[in-house]
Length: 109
Image 1 (cartoon, rainbow, N blue to C red):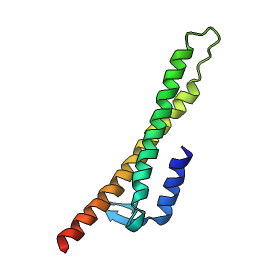
Image 2: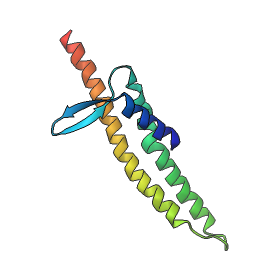
Image 3: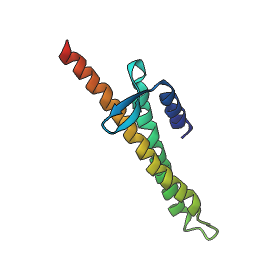
Image 4: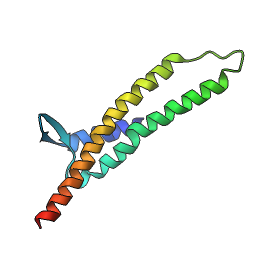
């Protein structure tokens, strides 16, 4: 989770605001595009793996008589999963913009 946050902060620092229709998004350009690939892997995937692991461990532990469920932890992971998917969409837009720029530069040459 910390690695995904670090990638996100670095991407915001090196990003350039781009107008995409009615909204302006900070998009990564130039040699920093690889950060979008790393961020896409870290943002949604790590949180969803942690959420799945929490569900499995809580179900396994439920058979023990001293088990106390941690519903707040599960709820927090569920909210983080939703937020990470939104960040993942931003990473996909960055990747798509980079690929479209490469295609446009190749067509212009």
